[in-house]
Length: 105
Image (cartoon, rainbow, N blue to C red; front, side):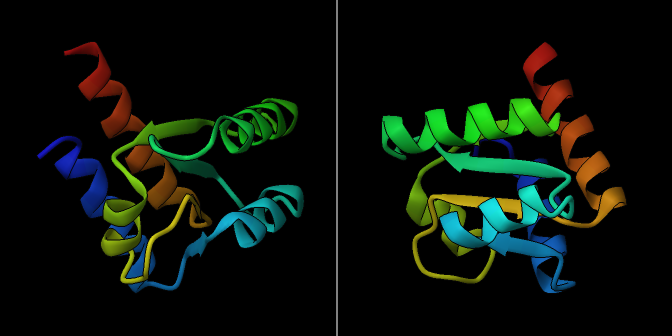
């Protein structure tokens, strides 16, 4: 499955209670400086993608698009989710490193 290693870090963060999920919670985490990386579902609406791309650019937070709403939600133990933010600095760094390695391969 795509990005399996990155999804493991996302799952670890969720089990540790270090994930803000859903559009409102993700946006709040980013604006309050708690969100270290944002993950968007590939099937999110174009408006949602643009909103988070612009917000993350402004706050200088990495943003990645992966999988679909159902898979993103399932990986964090929730229903469908359009967005999520990892709030733990170390887990976010591991997630980012893994995603960048997979892109460069």
